[in-house]
Length: 396
Image (cartoon, rainbow, N blue to C red; front, top):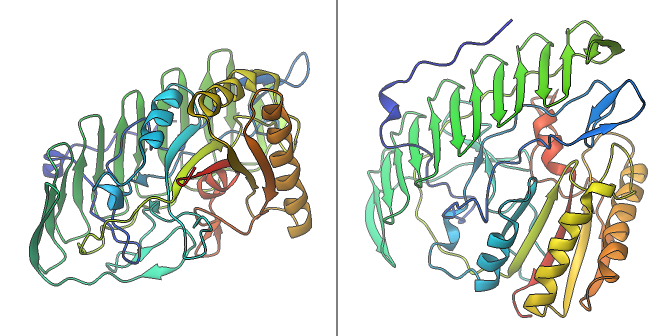
């Protein structure tokens, strides 16, 4: 069974995404060093001589087709610190690790998910944010230029954006184009869309099915509970009826949830640049830990060594390590797991750095994406919520 690719339409032109406002927060110039889609991790871990798993997943399970991630353009005035840029370069080639400027509230606490928008949408022109709430964007028309950034707002929800490197077209009918030279996003306004960034390709067909490819890794979701995962030496098939195979060996596995429909572009709003309060290094699901475990994976040593090297070279005196989970399981169990994972990262890094590190766990209380959409499970959102973050205040 296969899913055919969506034919290219007239929207293929100047590549896509709308300049989004998250309650006054406009989007960021996306570079692979500071922002990329939370791609599934292809590392294969043997659990027995005959059955293998995808890193961070139980036997027979595999990552969902990822959500489209919109860039945060609120830092276009280069208020992000140089340390953010340097750190991003250091982690650019490490799968599942992203580095981006952090936003904080008035107390200095990091705002989870601020500046990160996921295209859920309900087709009405509203935008459903990372916490599942709906935000309405205003439309008055205007032309503005801020530090070389030109924005045209036509007052009907459509508009253009350019800064010399990034081009955005919002057609006001739920569709639009975005390009930054390496990344292309196409949103067709009917729940479907495409995303490409180097070797990464995501197709969402708007009917619950979708595909993901990244080099040797291929994920297919056929929208009826069935799907497949392939990587070098590992093939997983889910037949959608509670059964599946791992490299030909039969396993019991739950049907796959459908890929959420993509939403529409919100009306173009006025961009209000924000100042970064620091840097957040994020380790996505499966990079450091096995499924339901707080023991650091042996193959994560190189990743943590890179973190230690950057912290040492930058002379960072203090940083906070936080653990986060999805909403599956009890609050107490998730809180304990998040604390244990943060503490494990601190313990591993303390042997390599002089940076004063503190560990804290937030369980499921700080999601960056919706765990459910309209009451249905959202595995791609839950995948993004299972993470460990290192926050480095800008004042350091």
